[in-house]
Image (cartoon, rainbow, N blue to C red; front, side, top):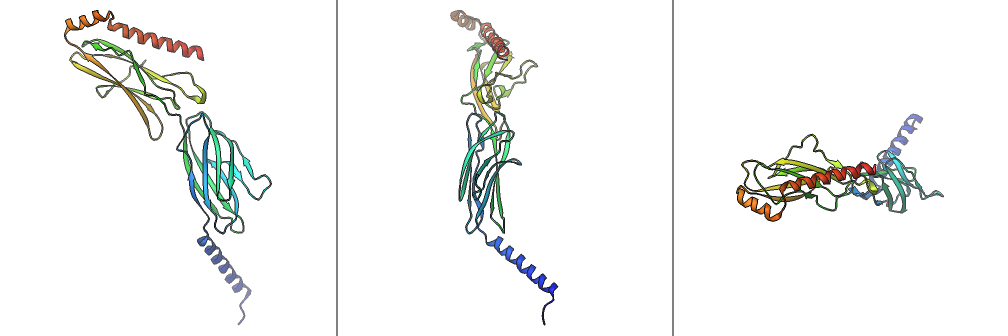
Length: 287
């Protein structure tokens, strides 16, 4: 008995769907490796690479995206095979692609931002299959050196006041600063906030923060003063430096020590104040 046109159409449709399903299941088209730096320094270009396997599929295009914006396209069948698209937050310097890999070089703007970079590989028709992978990259410049403490006296008496300064190396974003004495964090006064320098190339800035603290009346032995710089990226980058200040409760020995040095502890405070005033003036002049 011959099949009706409706039944024949239904059977052909089912066979086509089955054939498409089998092609999808047996296709080896996939991205095998995506390399995106976790951190990118704004002073130099970052290289992103995408490796894929086509098997029996023919490559149609490779596209790169920053978040939702296309920044790079490779079409091997077109006359102009590579196209670059500059978008907010990044400059695309160029790239090169082969049959199973594609590399793109980007120069991030000097802003501490985090963005998603996606590689998209598609095959020729009639399937036009698409494979995607995404990784994140944060624009950051790490400090090269530990913070520096200045103004810390070698010897103090209980009840005396210390005025200290901590300065950090240049970084992006600029480092926050925390003060600790004997592992106890010091709450800043209203005027003791972190100050920033003028930016260098790439947007890097140094930072500093003053600490004014009175030596406890019951203190003895030594105080462990620690300055900690914190780079607010994921994960956090911490660097610190420590100064040890001796607390002497014997007045005669202390006075003899100061007399032999010919310097009073207050001079340390004055030197730090002069340093801070000079730095603030320099910062104002650079604006």
